[in-house]
Image (cartoon, rainbow over all chains, first blue to last red; front, side):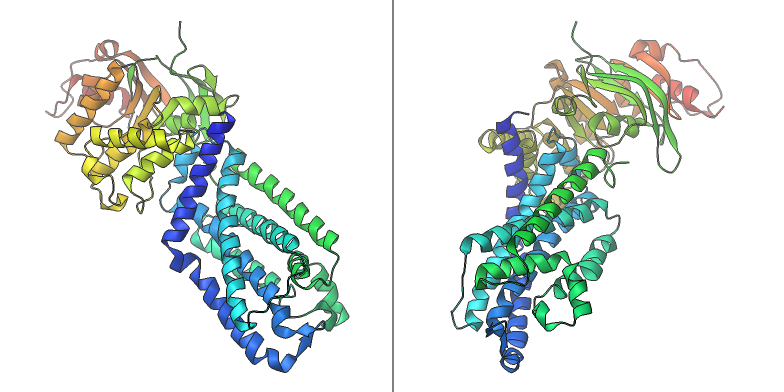
Length: 260
Length: 253
C-alpha cells in the first residue's frame, strides 16, 4: 500500500472509533466526568479544607493534575482494550482489518489513536470540571509540558490496553488488569499526596511505580514543581512507549492471541 | 501465462490442541475459474481459506495469491482477495453502508470513491432499502448479502465464499448465484465451499474434494463426475451425480 492508501486505512480506523465514542458519549465520556466531580467534591472540597496545603499549594490545586491523569489513564486504556477485545470476541469484525492489506503497525496506530483521542478529550473535560471546584483559578506553568505528558500518557495506556485486548481470551481478561494492576498503581502513584509525606519504605516502593513519574511530570506542567525530575519522567514514559509498541507489533505480527 | 488465482503447495496445519487439520494439501485455482472446494464438516476447507486470507497461521507449506506469496508479500496478496466468511462477522450496531465503506477504507479507498461504490453494490445485492438500518435488523439472507457487498468493495480479482448460502432461502440463493455468475463472466475468480452440492455441480468449472485434511479428488467438473459409479448401496436415496461421488470419496469405508 502506498502512503496515501495507508493514511486512508488509518483515518478509517480512527474515524470509526471516534464516531463510536461520540455516539455512546454517555458510556465513554460521562462516567469519568462524574467520578472526577465526586473526587473533587470529597477529596478537594470536604477533606481538602482540613488537609490545608500540600507542597506549598492548597490541596485542591495539588490534586487536580492527578485526577485529570487518573481520567486519562483509565479511559485511554479502556478504549483500546475494550474496542479491540469486543471486535475480536463479540462481533468478530476484527477480521475486516485482518483480511485487508493494512499492515500490523498501522493497525496498532489506528486503535491507539482512538485511545489517545478519548483520553485527551476526557482529560480536557475533567479539567473543565475542576475549574468549577477551584473557583475558575488554574495554575499553568507550561502548557507544552501539560499537553506533552497528557498525549504521551494516553499513548502508553492506549498501547497497554491494546496488549490486554489482543491477549484477553474472556471478558474477565480485560477487567482483571485495570482492577488489580492499573487502579492500585494509579492510586499509589501520588494523585492524592506528595511522596515527601510518606515514610521512607513507602517512598522506595513509590519510586518503583511508573505511574508516579507520569503523574509528577504532568503535575510539573501545572505547578512548576514535582517529586521527580522531568527528564527522568520523560525517559520512563518514552521507554514504556517503545516497549509497548514492540510488544503490540509482535503480538499482531505473529497473531498470538488473535489467530489460530 | 498469468499466475493462478491461488496456488497452495504442501500446506500443513496443526492446531495448538494437536488437531492436524491439513496434511500436505496442494491445490491450484486457475484465474477466472469458478472453483468448488467440497468436503464434509471438519475436512479442512475453512482452514485452507483462513490461511489463504491471513486469518489462520499455517504450520508448513506455501500459499500464493496471483503470484504473491502470503508470507513475503502479504499486503499484495491480501489486496487481491475478497472474503465472505462462514460466520457473520460485522458489527451489528453499524449500518450496512458504513460497514461496506469502512471496509473500502481498510483497502485504502477514499470515502468519496467508496460511498457511490458501496451504494451500488448494496443496491445490486437487493439491500438498497436497508443500507441505513442497523446490521442487527437484517435477516439472515440479508446479512450474507451484506458480507458479499463488503467483500467486493475493493474490486478483488479473487472472491472466496465460505458457505455463503447457509440459511438463505432458495429464491435469494438463485439471485445470489446469478449475480456471482455475472461477476465471473467479467473475470472474477471464485472459490466456493458449500454443502449444497447440486449448486456446486451447476456453477463450478473445477472441483476439489477434501477429506480429513487431504485432497481426495481434484479436476474439472466433468472429470470428477466421471468418477461416479452406479451403486445400489444407498438405501434408495439418490442425490445428484456430484453428491454420489462426494459420498463415495468421503465415506468412512
